[in-house]
Amino acid sequence: MLYVAQVRLGLFYLRNSERVAEGVLLLEQAAMLRPLDDATRGEIYLATLHLTAESYWGLDWPITIQNLEAIVVLAPNYQDASNRLFEARGLSVDWMPLDPVEPGNRAGIVRRRANAR
Image (cartoon, rainbow, N blue to C red; front, side, top):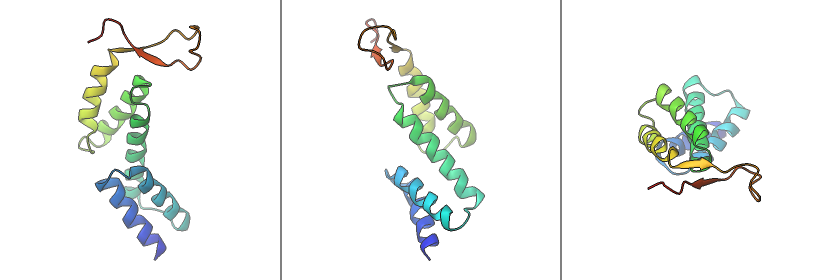
């Protein structure tokens, strides 16, 4: 019964809410009780790609774009992935990594180019 509840709620969160990370967690917990079907594991994979892209948004454009491209190839209509990919590609030309030897920039933080819009 717990397995069914976790799978149903987890899939609901993945498909219909802003609580995607919570949905992934619920599904991973359900997987510890019993194996998930292929379709559910596929949804977890897409959600993880989407969460990764959102996590790197504005920080590392190549990672963001790579994750969104993977989603669009696998599931072109997945949430807003196509629109976000288009937006990320446009924004990525306006950003560049700081010189890693620049004082105070050990993490390679990004900044907006001076001549960007």
